[in-house]
Length: 141
Ligand code: DQA
Image 1 (cartoon, rainbow, N blue to C red):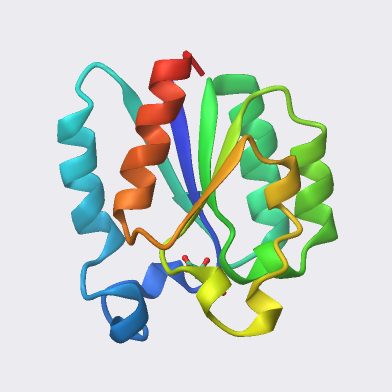
Image 2 (spheres, rainbow, N blue to C red):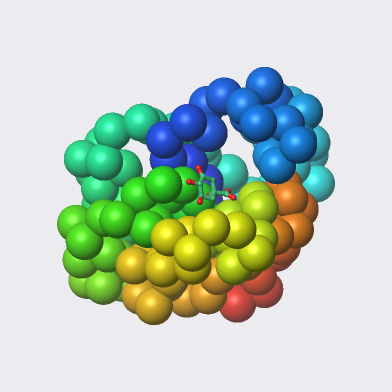
């Protein structure tokens, strides 16, 4: 099965960005391990700091992938455009947050994207991406 992992703004800085919250591991390093754990499946990866590029990546995934694991980062709290894109999608999108957004500042408790996602995993660190991939593979996309 082909899945897209889509990361939003500032997640290119994982490893050095606020390590007390997001850890010290780069996503690229984690991705090597993740891909080894799911041989026989294609895990595409795209990161962007640009909202429109994320929307284009979601549309592209709808045409080419069976599901998406998305951490829209700060856009999860603000982007009506991303929310609207998700609402119209025919393939499941699992929302992931590395930190537990509900235990942080009140503005992070609002997730515009979560209500139009298949589900939301928050607070389990990078493990959340693994759980999301497992879910999508078990459900068959
Ligand atoms: C995040 C949480 C967001 O509130 C924040 O803006 C991020 C990362 C997370 O993975 O915990 O950039 O999505």
